[in-house]
Length: 117
Length: 109
Image: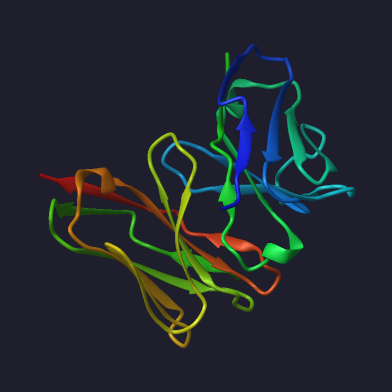
């Protein structure tokens, strides 16, 4: 089955610093990657959709200058939280799919728990 | 607008059966997914229905009625490890997933 790897699993950073989260598809070429955020006891919230080689599409209310997404290859997408603040502390999860997999279940990375102090 | 409704929380007894319902409204429809999510972990795929009817997979079954915009996840022979949140998600015509808020299932001995 499809394997999606996400790194790091958890990170603690100081307010004002930037944090980069990586999402890799290990056994297929991911033309599309999704970035989600999940606050405690809440559902997944889609932040942005990125297609390889093009700019990410951000959901309403998500600041594209704060959450930088790069999808430069078919196996790697990165999310950079710039100038992090305590309110950015959350569980960030990526998932990946491809054109051939549209309509198939999404497979998720293991998530990254970000704590901003 | 697009919307998914599912109960916030349910409680069941170990060894029993529980049914988690989900209703959806989407722009177009390309299938209904159920995911399991343990606290602090990413969701894992459980089932996918795109045609009406019941899909059985071991202790878990999922049902879909497209005309009613309704699905349920049926869990049999409940085990303590089944305590988790169960997320219902419908895929719209653009292949975007619309997520429900999740149902927290509490299993008691």
